[in-house]
Length: 275
Image (cartoon, rainbow, N blue to C red; front, top):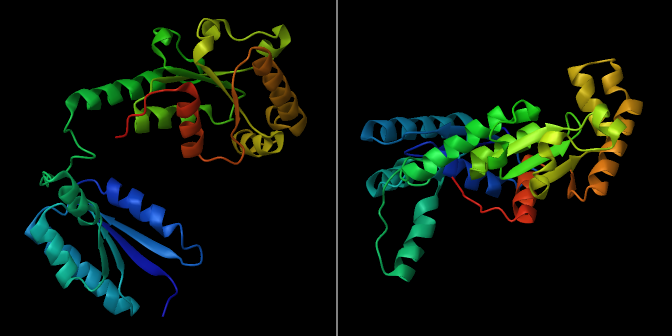
């Protein structure tokens, strides 16, 4: 019998809700290996029957029942999975909706796709606008409409500006631009001219030189750009410049994108939209 446990994330839409909550719970069990299977769009009797068959086949083959995180809203389909699947089934919506209905004295809509769908077109298009804006204003590529940015990330090349900007846009609908700080900026000890007027929206990212060298080596192995001496120089000069300009700094060396983005949202006092 394998020590690995199979986990299913079932949803009548994208599966993002089940994955996010389910994976958050699974991280608490460090000594267990999980095989994760996401099954989206379980929205018909045929799909429910099909996924139950797959779950039961897995239970037979592995000799232990899988774990199922379900965000299927339809009561009949959800009950069928709970009744017929040979698995530990955790119904995420029922766990929370039932007490909420009692507290609010109102039945929930039981409508699929409310959390990750097109229920609010205005919010959806605002999010798309933020993603397009962030892609256009990546790495200082464009300065047009830069004043519309809600936050502008600055720092040396490869310190995490681009992934953080995209995460802010995709996850929270924030219009985020980013600009690299280069040796040319250090020589004149000034910020790039395009961002000076946006100083109140600047947020600095920094990184330990040793980690920066590792990242740059993967991009340009053996180059002076990736050398430890150069990385130390750029990080030191960038930090000095940002501190001199009063720009808040965040070390990204050992932080996840989620932690970096959340810290920026909190410190910049940006409204937090969840999609």
